[in-house]
Amino acid sequence: MSKKSILSLMRPTGKLHLGHYLGVLTNWVKLQDDETFNCFYGIADWHALTTKFDETDSLKQNTKDVLLDWLATGIDPDKSTIYLQSLIPETAKLHIYLSMITPMNWAERDPTLKDMVKIMKEKGNGEETFSYGLIGYPILMSADILTFNAEYVPVGIDQVAHIEITRDIARRFNNIYKTDLLIEPKPKLTEIPLLKGLDGNKMGKSFHNDIKISDTEEVTAKKIMTAITDRSRLRKTDLGHPDECEVVFPYWKIFGSSEEIKEIEDNCKKGLIGCADCKRKLACKLNQKMAPIREKRKYYENNPDKLKEILIEGSNKARIKAKEVLDKVEEKVMVFR
Ligand code: TRP
Ligand code: SF4
Picture 1 (spheres, protein in one colour):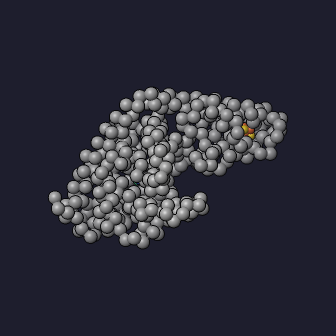
Picture 2 (cartoon, rainbow, N blue to C red):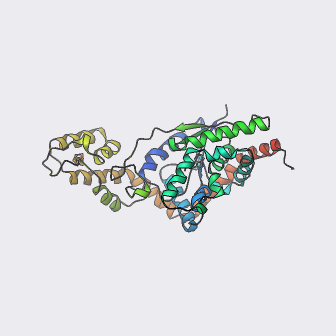
Picture 3 (cartoon, protein in one colour):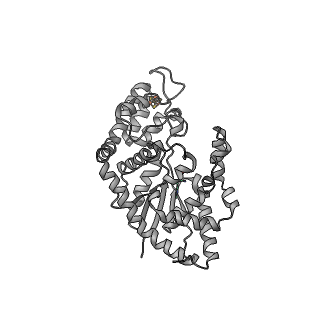
């Protein structure tokens, strides 16, 4: 039986945080270790250009940072095909063919795209920043998926609308060109154990409440010291309420062993441990967990040639499959060859 293809991409927006690690990357690693799947993981640098076309000074570094974080957290080039979107010209070609058959209003009604535009407007972006390329965001994403004829796309709930459009486009292509070539992909929703940011809101880069995978031990410890605890607790001897401890106790539940969690819970309730102490302990715990990951990241940071080689080789490997699909697409569309 041939393996099912799994594909997902991430826009290179810079260094990734623990929310990405726990919510996305651990799942990707699990999927790559499942023998029944063939995994493609891509860095969507073209998608970054749909909104940041004028901020490209950091694009290369952001691409490297994403790759470093992936490798550090266990995405393995021997198991998964790791590639860079802009190194797959087949995707650009497929994007053109799909653009021709996609009704304009399918793109315009895409709720995720609408949200992006709304947020950009709120930030004061003028009309000229909403490009033709941005309208094509979901079609480019469809091209990403359909170039590899991926069966499953692991994404968060916010991306599901895009996958729906991809299914519609695949079906329309098959209808128009009387074929069953393109597979309708299914979203693979990840049960994300929501990791709060240090201030209790959702962890996000733009909220300045995140801990990066690449943060040093000192920075991690400093950040943890600012995390919200039980707001009603003022002194160490006040009895604490772990259930109402907004960030620190939930972190313990994620990073601690069951004995550690129990101990913190008991000592907090009895007023035997102060919040500052509790956070110092948590920082140690977290740093201990992150140490091997950060070490691996350092290794690739110090071996940039190796890093580049992984991305180029992965992209070359990805192109073999991409070319297979594109050849068939061009045969169906009957362009001159
Ligand atoms: N739009 C996705 C995001 O912002 C990134 C992406 C681009 C993607 N192409 C894709 C995800 C294809 C899944 C499949 O997260
Ligand atoms: Fe939270 Fe720890 Fe303070 Fe208890 S002691 S309220 S668990 S930070």
